[in-house]
Image (cartoon, rainbow, N blue to C red; front, side, top):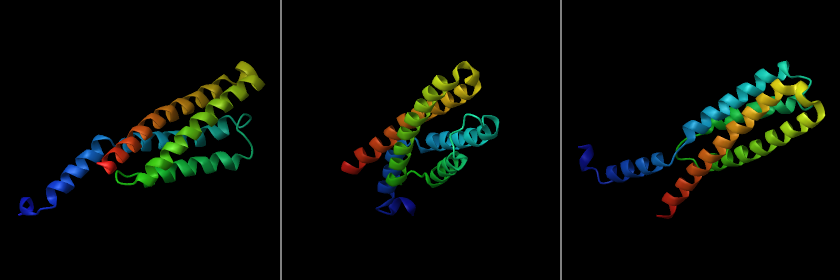
Length: 141
């Protein structure tokens, strides 16, 4: 009965095309891990965390919200994830250099966490770009 429905093959084909270029599950995990690292790091590295602290807390909340809204058919969320990833790589890497120039090796554990966050978002940027590219390739065909 289902095979006789004329739209079923198109739906199945469209879903497989999106999923072949969809990396939202990876970026979702990265956003959640990054948010957790930020929240866990605030009390440990309080002397290095930019003030006001609410900014770091709000950032972790935004990461969780975007991760929660991530789904295969949402171009808007994919683009938001791409922009967040691009901004996060830039901000975390910049803050890494700033912190090192102010505190030197005394801040090594914080530097390692900040570098880990920058690298996580570097991967998120890559996978977000692949997802967005895939969504626009299939949209134009």
